[in-house]
Image (cartoon, rainbow, N blue to C red; front, side, top):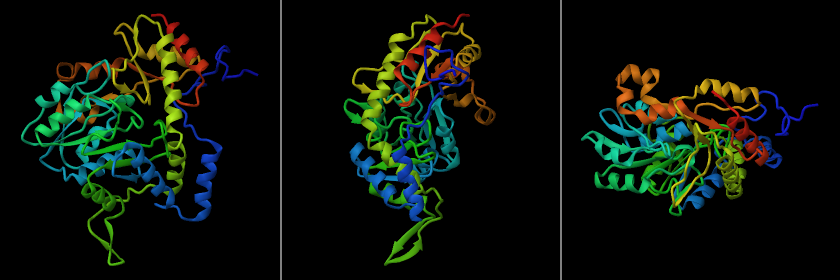
Length: 380
């Protein structure tokens, strides 16, 4: 029988997936224990996860919520961003980055990215500020911290909130400081493709107790205990994380350091073995620690990405686009009708010619080398 895990064999289609959650049997058993307990919502594992992440990042408070999108939504609501306001966001990201701005009634103001790291161009952020700007929301794309120090200085100079979209970047660092600890408030995702997963889930972190208290109310129907009695302080949401989900995430968070180290080995294997002249591999600036949530390469314009994806699929390798040029997708193009080619050429290029390769702790080093070999073997 063909061993699809053997990189020297001819694997069947999709035998090396883009990502695979790193769930141990002990993690699953812990979640099952919670299920057996009957305490399913915001129990001890939600508290343990929140405390662990706060200690990991060196922030005062963490709130676990239903998804990364919910985390971003709650962050903007806690900051009281709303109709008439503008929020600066990168033009290249997962569409949720802009969607949450729309959901609070504000307007996303898109800024192009740099192609060497796929993060927002810091020099263009200040140019995008208007009297209506309330917040800057940079993304640490694919696990690489953006030029957060420069952007933070801009936010401080203009007295704007700095909301870190760190969905992909738990464990990433800049000059020794963790992603998520720079901003007014920050958000992480616990989606299955992220480094730590609860299936669906998210985290909101901040040093501002007023903001985290608002998030706490808003995630749980606005419920507040007053003199030992339940009251409703606001019209909140049901954005809670279940305790069995938190148990899964907490177990993975406890081994984050070793998981990140292994991801770095996989990324190094790609960097050393991908030698195709029409493929540019990502670089990491000095002083940055990349979390490698995604290994994203950029294809030369001569490469038809769909043909390359089909080539890799035929060799048993799953690959695909990494993110979207948001102002070019249907809803945003219809609503704002921006000249994307003129205003966001780098975001458009990354969206059209970017390719995410398989990367997760469940891959072997040999599998990463196999993926690279199949990529190198592609011919126009």
